[in-house]
Image 1 (cartoon, rainbow, N blue to C red):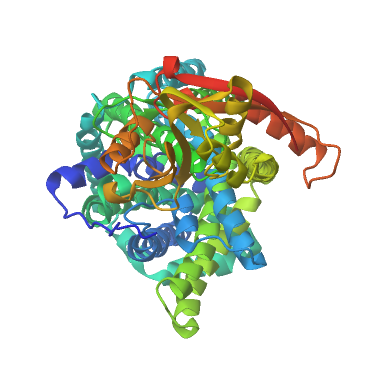
Image 2: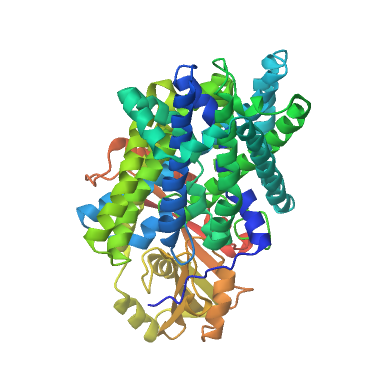
Length: 625
C-alpha cells in the first residue's frame, strides 16, 4: 500500500517566524538566565579574563556546531513527511529484526523517554532562575523564592486542561520582547569590554580545555546548558515547518543569546563573587524588577513548551504501539497539537514540584540538569548517521566525518554530564529509564497478546459456509467487531454468533493500524473488502500524530460501498483480563505485573476512537500471557 505524503516545506512568513519564538525557543532562549552562573561556579567562582574568553568561546562554538550546524542543517533535514522528533526519526529509519535494527529502535525509545526526564527539570530550573534575580536588589525575599516558584508551577500545570489556544498567540510576541531585552543587555556589557568579541577565535576554547585538563569536563557540563532546548527545533517541525524555525534562529535567537553571553562575559573582566548571577548583574538597577517579571513570563512559556511537547510525545508513542492508551483530550477544534493528557500532566507536576522543593535554587538544580538532554542528543546522532547512509544514500567517506564531528562533541558533553550524576543527574536518567522499561514491556506484552488472540481465531471457511447455508440467522442492524489481529472473521464475531445464535445483516470486522508516518492521505484512509454476503472487512489507517476518529473513517467506507449505518451501528470490542500463563513467554515477573497493571488501566475503546458510549459493547475475556 502506498501513502501519498510528500514533505511540505513551508515558506517563512513573519507570523510563522514569530510563532516559532514562542513554541520552539522558550527553553533555549532562557538558558542565559542560569548557564553562565553555573559555569562560573563550576570553575570555582574565580574567573580571570583569559578563562572568561575560553568559556564564551566554548559557548559560541557549541551553539554553532550543535545547534546551527547539526540541528538546523542536518537533523531538521531528516523529517518524516514533515514531522520531527526522535520517535519520528526512529520511524523514518524503520524497524527490522536484525540486532542493529533493534539497537536503533532502543536508541530512539530511550532518547524519547529521556525527554520526560528533561521535562520535569526544565520548568523548575527556569522559574527558579528567573525569580532568583531579585537577589541582586535584596536578600530579604530569599525565603519566598522557592514557595513562589511552587505556586507558579502548580498554577501552570493546573491550567493545562483549559488549553493554550487562546493565549498561545501571545507567546511569540512576548518571546520577541525577551530576545530584544537580553540582546540589549548584552550590548551594554560588550560596549564596556569589547575585547570579549575575541572569543569567536576557537583558540580560547582549546586553550581552556588544555589548561584545565580533565577538570575541563566540569566546565563543559555547565557550558552544555547553553544548548539545552535545541532538540525542540526538530521536535516542533510538524507545527511550523523547518524554514520558519531556522529563520528565527539565525535572525533573532542566536544573535540575542550570543550578545547576552558576551555581555555576561564582559562582567567577568571585573571582580565577581561566587554565587553571583551575571545575567542579572547586567541589568540596570531601575530595570531589575521589570526584567525579573519578563524573565518569569519567558520561563513560563519555556515550561509550557516542554509540557506540550511531552503531551505530543505521549500521543506519538501510544499510536506507534509503545505506550498504553491514555486519556487524551483535544483542547482546540482547529489545532491538532492542542491536547491535554491528564496522567502525564499530574505526574510531571508532582515530580517538578518535588524537585523545586528539594533543590530550592536554580544553582543547585543545575547539577541535575543536562544528563538527559546530552544523552538524547548523542542518541540522535547515532540515528542521524543511519539516515545519512540508508535514506540519503551518502557514502561512508562522507557520512563518517560529518557524523564523527557531531559524535565527538556529543560524547564530550555526555561524559561531562556524567559527572553530575551524584549531584542529581541520576534523577532524569532514572525517570527516563522507568519510562523506557514501561515502553519495552508494553510492546512485548501486546505482541504476546496478539499471538494468543491469533490462536483463538478460527479459520473463516467453516463459519462462512454455515452463513452461506443459512444455518446462521440474520437480523436487522449493523455490528462492527473491532479486531486486533486483522482477521476477516474475528473471534468476537464467532463468539457473538455462538452466544446469541444470530448475526446482524451488516457485520463488519474492523482493524485499526497506526502507520509509521505522521499523516495518511484521505484517499488511503480506509481499505474495504467484501468477505461474504453482508460480511465486510475494513482496515483503517491513521498516522502517528493524527486524532483517530472512527466515525469519520467509516463515513469514507460508505463512499466505497460498505453499507454501514453509523447512527444505529453497535461496536463490539474486547476488554481483556490478562492472567498468568502456565508456560514461559519471555516476560519476567515484574514485566508481567507491570503490563497487567498498564493494560487494566489503559483507556477504553470508546474514549480513544471518538465513539458514542451508548453504541459500544465491551466483552470481557481472559487471555493468558
